[in-house]
Image 1 (spheres, rainbow, N blue to C red):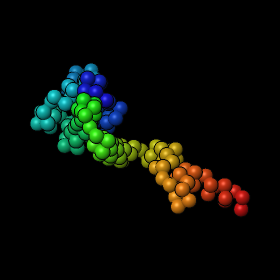
Image 2 (image 1 turned 90 degrees about the vertical axis):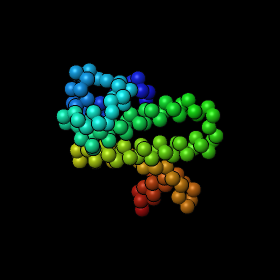
Image 3 (image 1 turned 30 degrees about the horizontal axis):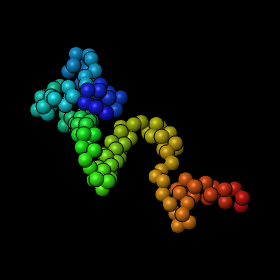
Image 4 (image 1 turned 90 degrees about the horizontal axis):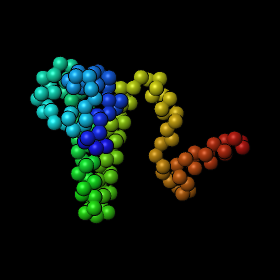
Length: 142
């Protein structure tokens, strides 16, 4: 995600998207345009509260960090890159949690069925999905 890309309206609640579109007279702004508006101005905008602003800032901050990391990644050690990856994964988990909380319950159940979970190894050295498949085949043979 780059600052000059259109702001991802599909990644935010519809009411926040309406506020953004109203503020930019019906057109989808770039992430940079949204980022350049100070928090004080956003909070004075009708329909924009602290929670909505936090959602917007999570996206603009992630875009800024990604641009900086692309520039700096040529100079980072493997350990620094790994720390950065872990931080991004944590941000992604935070976003996923907040998006799931805003999804209707029936959609959350459908998403959960498709998700297999993290890939881990058990005591036998099998990957998580391999272990689940082995366990399922044991139950079928019983």
